[in-house]
Image (cartoon, rainbow, N blue to C red):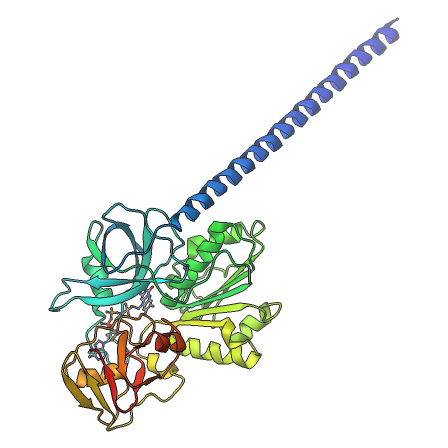
Length: 427
Ligand SMILES: Cc1cc2nc3c(=O)[nH]c(=O)nc-3n(C[C@H](O)[C@H](O)[C@H](O)COP(=O)(O)OP(=O)(O)OC[C@H]3O[C@@H](n4cnc5c(N)ncnc54)[C@H](O)[C@@H]3O)c2cc1C
């Protein structure tokens, strides 16, 4: 009798246990189903948001760039590293901002620089992708060059760092420049930024991230040490999301040894420079468009390496920021033949080139003829001048517009061009 009761009790306990297990399993299945449904809903919201964002960006295409200077307010100033600050700029007129091509730059007419009687014009690349409300630039404070330690530090960069705070007003020219990508294209890209030269390629990278494009991108960032890295947060985030974005690969190369006791992250390399040998060791092929911006000597080394590797010229794109070594990357010896005569029509002056004159701008300065300039390396077009009679030869390829287009439009870039005998310009 007691054995039968024991059996019944055992059966009841077992049945309860089975029911409990089934209930828990069902609850788990329901939770899993709910979680996957929520994930699907989130994904669908994300897709709709992306579509709205894309639509908003497309609608900006209809906004035309402005002529001349437009007033912008500094809405935010962010210190990115010891000597780099980002400035967020909103138009004072409240009208929409034209969309720019990632890699383009803005020109600034800076008034009120101490001890300067006239405004100073400089170019700064847009360092982020397009946003409807603001543009962003990132500026490195430039010190005296190592070979001239007593020279005054950089005028415009020092002024922006020291005198321009949130709320300040700046005169800004519309986005321009040909060192730029079309974010809707799909050709694979290699983006190389050295030091502050990272700004235009960062804009390209951010545009690709923003568009959720599956375009293959290799991003290389060369700096001396980790404390100079202004992309730590972005690259850490990209690294975490690498499974979501297998198309984006990146490496940060520090030329110095990392000696702060921390470990290198998988995308960091120390005692390494960005070279074509490094790029070759990582890329599956040379079938990429290469965009490089960095110190002139780094760019020259990379350009030579890419040409030796057999990358066609039309796939190598470069932008030079002016600097002490800029002249050394000129592809031809840049000197005007002494005795060459040039007439500057508006100034009413005719000048004969002395020995050692390196450009039409240089020649104009010997005769106190003012030609506004910003970059002195053929990048910005500030000095563009109309040729009335005769011809010029550009001593390096202008990155503002290619030489055939310039000549077709009857223009030259005095900062990098050599006049031929008898040239007449409208300056
Ligand atoms: C298309 C383009 C995009 C650019 N984008 C960026 C960007 O995104 N971020 C950025 O930081 N920069 C950028 N630049 C560079 C920027 O335009 C300026 O050239 C840079 O900020 C230096 O300008 P500055 O007025 O501060 O220096 P400058 O006053 O022009 O001085 C330049 C250098 O010359 C030295 N110098 C001055 N006087 C003498 C002298 N008598 N003898 C010897 N040396 C002297 C200075 O010490 C300094 O090292 C870009 C340039 C171009 C063309």
